[in-house]
Length: 169
Image 1 (cartoon, rainbow, N blue to C red):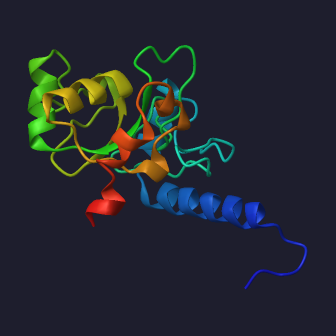
Image 2 (image 1 turned 90 degrees about the vertical axis):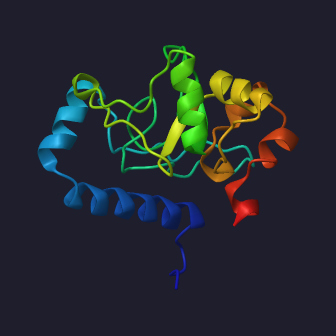
Image 3 (image 1 turned 135 degrees about the vertical axis):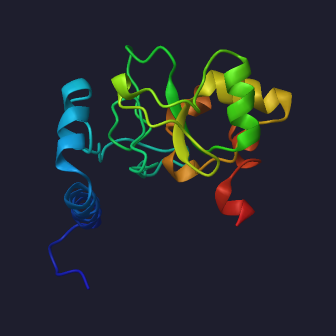
């Protein structure tokens, strides 16, 4: 129950902080510190980011930790040349397709704190690769609540909804 005077956004912000705190205590502290050496925002969410429905952007994944900033969200800025904004549940078919095109998401790369992906992992994909995979018939399903609104600058909501995890479940 929400006390009077509290705003819904405060409750959402508090919930986001709790999720991150729970993850942080479970996660290996050394690993998070190591990630923060490369990605200062690791484990820290942006509660102002918007998804394709105009609502608060949800976490994509914290295990493995994803996102351009390695904070679990599909956030982007001008330095993100890949525009990692689509929260996908990767499939073997997509992983093989991506590897064949020069982006090996399967092989771990410890120097980048990248664990390698397997079927079923959630990951913030580059919009251009996801759309290319869509045209090739191998695009993985996506979590639209965790897909950045910027995706609509590249792909229509109608196409994105064809791959909605929520509609598949």
